Image (cartoon, rainbow, N blue to C red; front, side):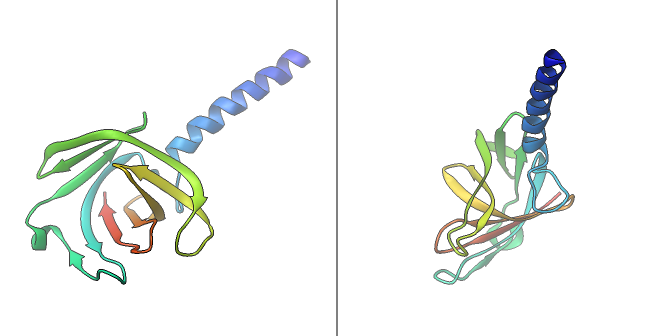
Amino acid sequence: MKKKFFLFIVLSCLFSSAYSLESTSTGSGSIVNTWIWEKSMGGTSNPYTATPKTIGFTKKVVFTPNGRVITYKNDVEIRNSTYQVEKGISFFDKSQHDLITFEGKTYVIENLDNQNLTIVSNNEDAARTIFKR
């Protein structure tokens, strides 16, 4: 009986840790995928709107299942680093959200579903970036 209980605990821990990486979301999607940059909008202290057309380049990010994020500009790899997703407190509403940290910055995952990813800088500027699959 003790062996079965121990095995159940071990398997539960393994599945819950694998599940948390694959399904971190505020919707029904997974962060693990290729995301194409669609638009960025500055916060109140720096209002702007940037798109691939206005900036003159395309950008995509690939979040891998093993915790790597690869950033491409015009389909050329420009960065390959780690990312981390965890629960945390957002700067602007002081409540708990899914946060993602990569390339030296932390973002609140505002929207994540099968087709959309919106992240917001977790600081007073609150710049928003929208990606599509």
